[in-house]
Image: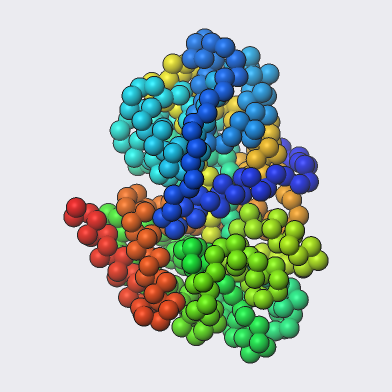
Length: 431
């Protein structure tokens, strides 16, 4: 039975959401995060020996310490902890260590280093009982060629945050349940002299598009990413209809071109100051809005779908815990992952990190303002295409961002963008 506890009412959202938001910005915008030197801290002596397991994390020691201390208390096994910041430095350091056979027993498996699976650097965990509580979306993220290689216990979700007072001026008290209805709401807001909606196009964060795509693919009964990269489908075949529908925000001037001059932080500021009615928001935006506009009444809902009643969230499963096949203490590594999947560990991690945990054996409480997003993340109805792309994700998303920004400016037709992605993928595969 799931364990339902009432956690700290104010989880430490800012730190974890900053990581999640920064990761998405790095992936979507093709930018590199600032890095610092790796740090190592040993929880107990005898690292790598009997009664000890080594762990290479991209969560800081501050976040992980309550979890590691609980593991040691319950099992008597100590943890040798090391850390590197996400994303580029962690990935490069992990790859270097594994290839040199100096990798930790347990490490973080990310979208950016899944190629390590093909190189034999990640243990196949398929069939392990501790994987059973893992959410289906998290399990899918940790699966390569039908085999599960990691334990992912949390996810993030983003949707459309709206100012209740401004929506009321257009006769609405919530988001419509279809994309056509959403566009009609935007037109009503514009007619009232209210700027309807912003996505952070400057930073390549097209939040509403990703959820719109997810809902569209879900209604079709197929997410086409694998088929596109296997040559069985194309972006043009699968993306054109929802992309053209999303782009009406710009082609109908419901979102002004001036949005290209706003960073993600500035978009949040515009919303907090009542200058735009809605924007594409993640849970990491909630504390900023609450602090900047403490009396603002707002809510966040899933992105309305192409068909009525098929709303979907933008989002992704968080990176998971994986085991080095050459672990010095493989039994302790398995014991560590079994513990990390337990209700006690999930609760401790959720409290220390502010992450939205998604396992079926523990139901967390949520901080004020993120309940809808948290329930969305736990539902598994989340989608972010770039994390599903098996290769060339950085180059393709850069091409996409360029095309979309030109579309916002009016120099590219939306229906031509998916074909441009097909062309880019073909060029990259030919190199």
